[in-house]
Length: 417
Image (tube, rainbow, N blue to C red; front, side, top):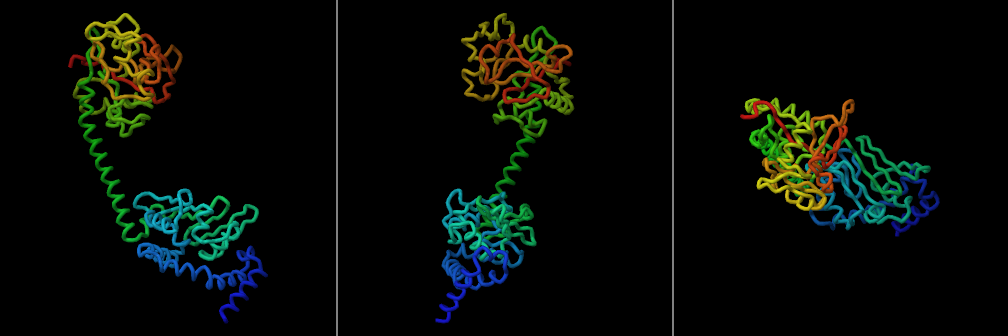
């Protein structure tokens, strides 16, 4: 009987004072807390006690975090927790896709939580308006400051947590925990460790692969240089591949990833840096070769391989035409709108692959005297047959990059070695 009277008195006091004033007036705030003792928190406590053991453990972590770190505990969610615990808690509250999100990387604590208004309502069983939801959230985390002009509610804690609630939803963030290990249940900690172990293993395998590539691909570049009959230069049997670029430069800028695919998205300036680093390697110095870009005349002579037509000549003497271009080239008719591993088509009579199509190839030459633009030849995967002709070409500024622009190496010193 006494409890019923108290609840009626409190309800009357709340109505008289007005819910919106609860955020600014401590007296009303105290009344809200008293009412909360009979309503939300008793319900929340009963629900938490009835939760599965793993979820109970998450609630325990949230309570401890709020007590020790001044962190925000919104229905069990807090920055610093594991993303796996957050996912389990979201499932417990039956949050649907689009009703919440977390920002965290494997093995690291959550730095930001976001909930849609529908998600907030599902967790708090709060009202329909923003003000009512703000009261429901405040009952759990403490006073929220109300910025009426922005229709925004905010709470800042002394450890850097910022909670904001507006019509876009509820966000809890703390950049300071981004690099920390999460406060996690045993189950989540095990999953986080598995994630980190997998990442570390992948990184180690990638480092080993790069080391192997450096040992294998540089000698291959030397071996794959073809001496052009009757000329004092060699030219690459293939376009420079992504694995070869990565072996020298330590990264892969290409759009169409594939270690055996030609490297692209490289400028003329980028190619010159690659060549400078390549020539400085001991295994290249020992080869007697000095790599460079081919001149436009060298490129065309090597491409034609004795042909007097629009395209190259094959080893058996057949000259490629527009109708048979697909035998030697990846271009718009057959490329599928992407590059392909080098060496899959027929070589020309000099044993060179992909001189037509796949990617455009940078040459050393200026487009014209007094012009900084550089020549490119051969056409690419996105071009029609006309652009792939041996006698056709284009030009770009030396800093231009795109996903159909690569290169092939030439060498002119000690070419008989």
